Length: 259
Length: 252
Image (cartoon, rainbow over all chains, first blue to last red; front, side):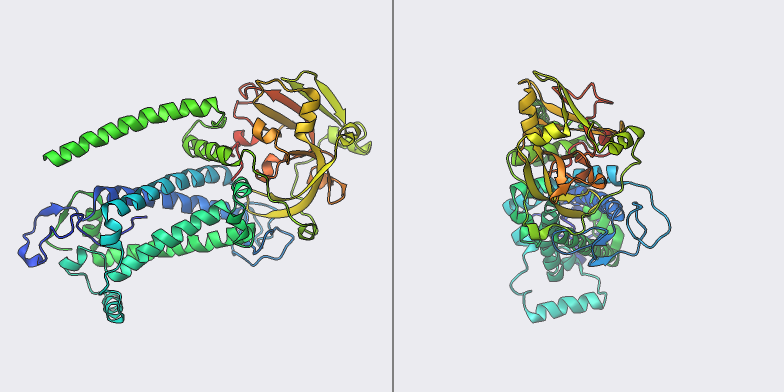
């Protein structure tokens, strides 16, 4: 959940604002230990969920809207891929091998770990002020002018200055807020909406979505959105300086000579 | 290392120690209250145990959603089935008149029921969804006898913890805990949508538990065993599907 390529001091204003005053030396990491650890646990879990999720989809690459859907009903759409089940009319003349057993085990194991990690991140962000200081946009940024400057900087592929690299810009902040407080909750919710036992206890989980198959379809869309986020995120890290950003997110120290 | 980080390190160490001992206590309590699934070993044991334990606590008495008759899927889907064996074909030729369901294990009276006997018990019906772990689903009316009614007839011992159920296909068996076995929507189904249960959907007798995915609803049931341990069955993982790499608990 704490996916962030830019840097921000956990202690706020403890860094000099002028980069030129800084010798090329190692300073404390801009990311707190908790942000770094939860970031990489989330990364690993997300990749596990992605691989296992793709394997599960292959067993029935057809998507429906409403309560039910199967090989005898008209799908909303189908993915143009072969299936691991002979009964699915995939249009391909062969059947892939069944990987659903371990995929489902891995999917739920990774889901548990990422949900617990995410809770830890969100709760500690509230407690330490990380959410307020680093994620909620500043009032001055929330103007058309602030947005335009941030968008222009992205379009012009402007590398962040040292000062800017010390905090998330307004586009980053909004993106991370959407990922943490919209996309992740949605993907967890729609995942639970597919569980026949869970919805027996909390039927509204699925009824407000319009049915079990709607939940499954939304789960796919939200997952695709998260993959898009991951892609853009990695591209931005590369533009901002892959080595320095990775170092900042992994080790305690970051090299300030060049970002 | 300054004082602050040393203190941090000590606190982290203490928290880790508390966490590990807490896990040990939690595991013992979970075992006592039947919150550990039989396939809890191996690298996926953690996730599997968390899923089973939390869903068992949350859903012990909850009822699967039921639907209006207008939502019944037409035509009902019959999933692919393994080739039917000679024993099945012989019984099918006789109109299933000789189909038997035998019950043994931790019961007061071992018993063997014909389909006619099972139909003499109160007939129940539910319009519920069958969801396959692959992702597809359909809604049907299922008609049958509550498994709990059959278990009441044979009288189960208080130490019973699982019901193991077997298909006429010797490679096809599953088990459920007593919360699912005694659940009012767990049926031995013999009818569907007002008719006999078609062979393609598991007729003449199918286990039906709507709060778990389709693969727990085993087709062509001929035998039940009530037990306090799954160790003596196959590899001890509780079902043929667990031995084939699928989770024993299929509530999600």
